[in-house]
Image (spheres, rainbow, N blue to C red):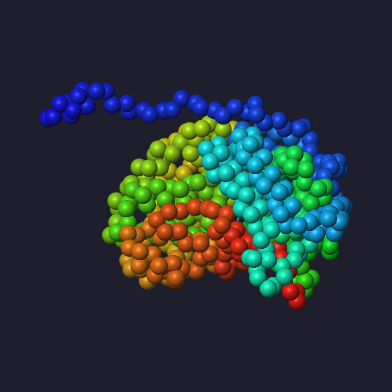
Length: 492
Ligand code: NAI
Ligand code: MG
């Protein structure tokens, strides 16, 4: 035995790696008791309100306006007015100035926004701080850069703004989805009425203060809060030129039906059931990190989550063993603790949906694994979960769970992997893990998914377009492609 080994042999090995609490301070955030709607640069009193809570503790945070058709009408009128009287005729470089300001203010106030996002939505502070906020600011920086270059982006096509955009966003990435919607719309000279998701309105409402600081002209961005009824009123409004929606496939389909024949433009970013495919020549430990990031990031509340893991048969056992071991190290708990990996489930409703599908998985015969972890008593929680022995026909292999639940399936050949991966009504994203470059390209060509990540997962950049095939929706957000839905071209 070497000296070093001997020393190691004698030193006590700590068995319990419990971390001391490392809570982020809430003091940076101020929350009003009650909020109205942000219309024409001012606060419009809400006639009816509901309570928004922290899903980690069920603590009430504020009273939020339930927007009526009348509120939506006021907001659309303000947006139309701002669009016709200044914003769309402003030189692109001037519009860019505002977008750059917004981006810089988001960076400056990022800690405040990150804490509020985690408080209202339940996601770990580590993620809101390191992912949501930097990406939200990056989107504004990126589209600020395009505002004065639209003629170069679409040469000889005379790009013009579409008009008033109605935008409806979900609760999984509240501020980030706001930035995906607002930044390109404004860069192209449109004005906006945005409806945040009912469970996570607070960062959108704080964003109104960023608009005030940036001195954005009144009416260019209007925010009306409320549930699906408010969203439906926005979709229905005759003076909205374009609807951009991110959310469930069910509501996306309803919106498409509602808009048929109206001439309003529409982009839909809907659900997913992504395949994350691991070949036997891949670096297994890296793949395990990618699998974990793919499904447990943001509690699995991710439209592009890698929720179906396809493992080549020859490495099935070692991979699943490594994965289970890795799961034991995930820390589930207080979203505001800097060491937390998996936070709270966003709402009681979403928790019910996850529980129902997990029960269906067990009833259909899949084998469930959850690492030992103590879940807090108050709030909405679900332990990271892996299902093995999953058949393609099971509900857990077909339906979007939108929670920290992974279904493991196997394959033998690349052809079989492609066939199984594409066997879904969705087509938003996929992951491929292999050492072979040629195989990555071969797979990427055949996978019916808007994004294919190779040897990584859930990687985002504002310059890269994102969007789906089939029931995952249509239209692209991000990149040059993300400008197009907000522009009219010659002869249009
Ligand atoms: P949802 O689609 O009902 O909600 C998304 C947004 O649409 C919210 O702002 C909501 O207020 C609004 N909305 C609801 N009904 C509407 C209507 N008739 N007209 C216009 N707007 C409407 O999604 P929900 O109920 O929160 O979640 C259900 C499931 O949908 C989740 O379990 C998940 O599977 C999926 N989902 C997918 C998302 C994605 O990013 N692709 C985001 C959120 C949910
Ligand atoms: Mg719904």
